[in-house]
Length: 284
Ligand code: C2E
Ligand code: CA
Ligand code: CA
Ligand code: CA
Image (tube, rainbow, N blue to C red; front, side, top):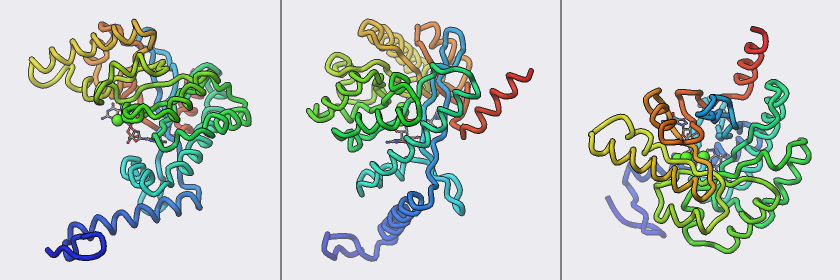
């Protein structure tokens, strides 16, 4: 290994060169995907644990590469946040999600199910609420059907611009969901300081509810029950992420968690698949 070059980069380190090559490749894939329209919005249903009906759908970005297949979002988003492409990707995915919601509404007859969309901090620009208002109007979707999902990291520095954008979203009737709840630095304080409507308990808590060491299991249960009680006191509804087993679902019900999302109910999927399922249900 040898340290050299403008940025003190490691030259001759195969690992390093590999990652830069991978990175460049992903950057290229992103640009190509924007040009060739390869971005899609997969939908994952969110289920009311009370009566089992679908309360909404979370839109999850996929890059559908014709040669490489479906690329999951994590690397793409991390790199797009660094290069600044995240805004263009986000707008594209949001438009796809709106079109999907229109088609799904037609198939299901349910015009109340909400659409939850993930936003990175960099996307929360002052112009965003106006843009989303214009796009929803163009698709004939009520902005009250939108849920803006942000993570705790977005609120960490209490940026006045982000606060303004969130307040504007609340004003136009969008709900705000706090994603990955419990993994950040001061999760609970965000509930009192920002206009949060929905708390999404991170899947790590759900995973340890019914597996692993007894002590951890008990503590996770107390945490989920406690988070739910506090969220309800703060007039937030609670959704559990990553629900994979009936045992987890039953515990979540017992703790008063409102909604669940996870492979137990449905995987994220192309909207055509959800529509086909509604069509079958209607025929039987
Ligand atoms: P997230 O918002 O926490 O989304 C939930 C993730 O959990 C999704 O991963 C979903 O596929 C996965 N998941 C759902 N149910 C289960 C389950 O039962 N078990 C397990 N193990 N996983 C489950 P995905 O689709 O790979 O997305 C990863 C992250 O990428 C998301 O985490 C979100 O932070 C980000 N993301 C996805 N789409 C977008 C987007 O359009 N814009 C932005 N800014 N971020 C996005
Ligand atoms: Ca999310
Ligand atoms: Ca999450
Ligand atoms: Ca997550």
